[in-house]
Amino acid sequence: GAVVSQHPSWVICKSGTSVKIECRSLDFQATTMFWYRQFPKQSLMLMATSNEGSKATYEQGVEKDKFLINHASLTLSTLTVTSAHPEDSSFYICSACGPSQGAQPQHFGDGTRLSIL
Amino acid sequence: DAKTTQPTSMDCAEGRAANLPCNHSTISGNEYVYWYRQIHSQGPQYIIHGLKNNETNEMASLIITEDRKSSTLILPHATLRDTAVYYCIAKLFGNEKLTFGTGTRLTIIP
Image (cartoon, rainbow over all chains, first blue to last red; front, side):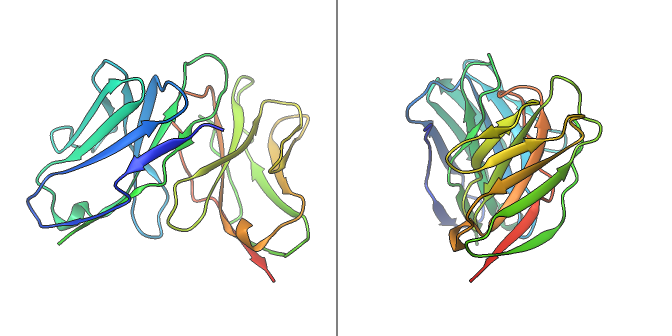
């Protein structure tokens, strides 16, 4: 089945640093990738949608200058949390989807647990 | 996307069939029903999806009522590893965003 790899799986860093998370589709070309955030005991919340070669579309309330998304190839999207602070600590999850035709499902990475000290 | 309603939690004995209901009374004719599950501290895992016919794969079966206002996910022989939060989502196509509700927390009991 379709495999989405996310790296790193866990990161701890100091407040004020920037953190980059990678999301790769390993066996299919992902024309669309999504980034979600999940706080403890809550459901997943969509942060942004990225299409290869174009700017990401951010959900209301998500700061695009703080959460930089790049989708430069059909197999890789990155999320950079800039100047991270403790309130940015969360579980970040990406998903990827192939070409838009049909009802093929999105496939998710295993998430990145980000802890800001 | 149509709103879905699921019970907050359910228990099921190991080895028995787990039947997880989902109501989606406002679903439109071209919206699919997708099921995902999330095991603790992992990303969601795709299970199955359908439009109006019943579907079965190696993981589960999906039964959709004739009026499409509700569906049931069936795990035929639940194991302890099936303990997870199960999400039922109605949406149009694969590359459209998924809106996660609170899901059903399924606990398989030994």
